[in-house]
Amino acid sequence: MRTSIITLALLIVTITTTAQKQKHLEFEIDPLAYSLGGASGHAAFTWKNERIQLGYGQLTLPEGMQNHKNVSESFKAISFKWDYFFGKENASKGFFAGPTVDYLFLTYEDELDNELKEEQFSIGIRAGYKFDLFQNHKSLSGLYLTPWIGTSWFTNPSDIQLAGKSYSRKSSTIFPTVHLGWSF
Image (tube, rainbow, N blue to C red; front, side, top):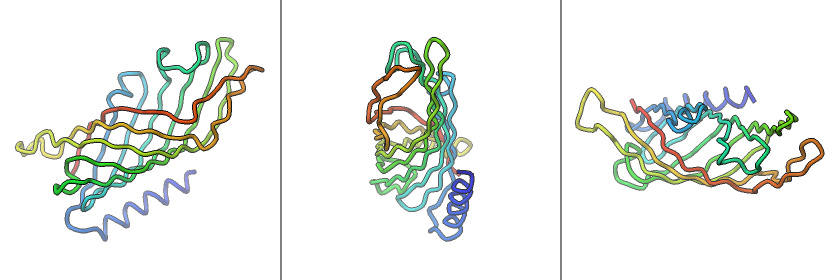
């Protein structure tokens, strides 16, 4: 896993040295994840109308979002996203869409502290809009807001087996959020 992350980081660096003039490095966070007690951080490279992004997120799902009443669900994820921007503004703002691949570290825990940990991939698509918040203010230039929604499918959607009980698992998820970022 560590080798894959290093390889991807080297790929991003290589692309930055060969990309066209409209290239930027970006950093993003997901304020919603932090407000729910989780974490999220992403680094991206943009050129022309494209963006590639490597990210990390973690969250224990709030009780109202749990799939089963007495089973706590949490995850840590490493994600890779590729976005295509459809406007003439390149990747600086506008509507985008693209595929995502996530490597998930999932944890399920029941009320008796029985725990199941597993790892798996999910593959999905997402779409959103990137707003350039302060394009006319030089000191805040590059700050942007990106609401987006995605859907992902688990590569192994089998039922969850925990302490002799079987819990159904959805084969896909829908994930809406908002990222706050800075491009330079």
